[in-house]
Length: 200
Image (cartoon, rainbow, N blue to C red):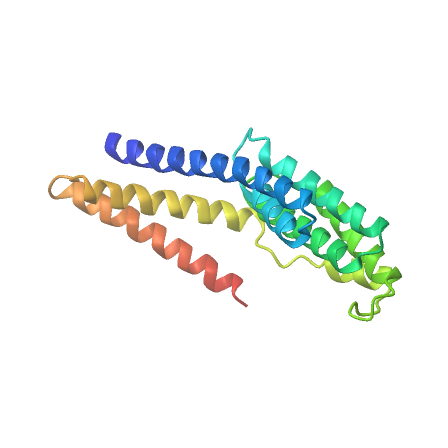
């Protein structure tokens, strides 16, 4: 089991370091794009930073703040399409990072209010006419996986990684091999069941 724990710890450490690097680089790229008024690129990079979630990392919050600033500035200058793009990216990022233990309800609410406000007041013919109330109602309909299902997915991933790690690094003979195969199989089946139930 020590090898399985080491495998899991290594995978988690590598993933955390990668997310930190992505967040750092994306914030810098977003600032550079904003300085050139390349708003789609600034939004894409800020969203990448906002979704690079690692507990304790400053980059997701900075990415969300940049998206909010881009949205507010676009609203102020009447650029409704860029405002909608920024608020939409903010909402998506808030929902994505909620999946890893950060509720992000304030950011999501801010994004949804911005989307509804811009959609209701826009004079741009490319923006569909919709009331603020209708827009908010549509946005608040939550189709993402609940926390319970996400916890099951996390446990299933750990079981699969641990089982496969044991098999890869020699689980031994007899009982050790059966335990490793069982862990990997249970993890895979749990994952498949959650995805099948939530695909409806």
